[in-house]
Image (cartoon, rainbow, N blue to C red):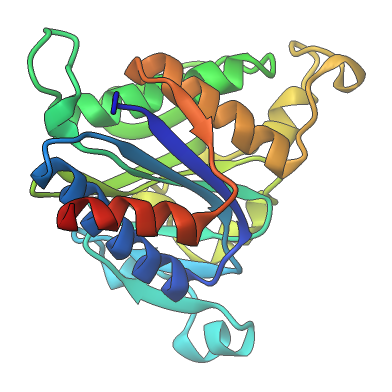
Amino acid sequence: MDSMIEYLWLGRVDYAEALALQQRCVEAVYAKREAQRSGHLLLLLEHPPVLTLGRNASRENILASDALLAARGITVHGINRGGDVTYHGPGQLVGYPIFDLRSLAGPSGRRLGPVDFVRQMEEALMRLCSSYGIEGNRVAGRTGVWVGATGTERKIAAIGVHVSRGITSHGFALNVTTDPADFQWIVPCGIADRAVTSMRIESGKPTQPAASTSPSLEMESVAHRAADCFGQIFGQPVEFCHNLPGLLRSAEAVSHA
């Protein structure tokens, strides 16, 4: 079977449930590789309000007390991705690419490494933003996607990944209709001198197309468009999957074939 990206739109998913699902997907993609077959999964979803702490995170970058977070129903998870603290919540498109890097080529034509993987994720998200009339860019030394002039950049997408046995997990968080006030509980990604923004805010600026002529910012619509952009940047055909249990059973069965 030729390599492709199979993707799913899962709607709103509890963070702990998504962590468990990622691990199952990692094992499924690894089983395919062991059976001399390749394939990639892209999980697209939203989370209820949650804070996550990456491997390099400082607890000092969570500004709210544990009691206040608990009162607001905001859970905190320490995880094995790179990066510092970030917020996930309604209005934010979260993507978990479970990709087999050993079957992907980087810009040099050699096997794709973790740094090139992150750069290509940024490129896919910038292409997605561009399709909504929003010019995304990079900031040297700061992973993710940004908008605005040098010195006044605003972060629109955060990225943090983990790679084990050449299989990726975790991924990106793109602020679609997210209220920047939702980030008040933290120093986002440990960066105190730059603001957070969203596609809704940026698409409404005078330099961008009028809202009436811009594509819909309805979350599922953005998710499908994001999958297409990942396919373009990673050079893979993309297929929408309606049935997650069936997809995982099929992938897992490969190891027993």
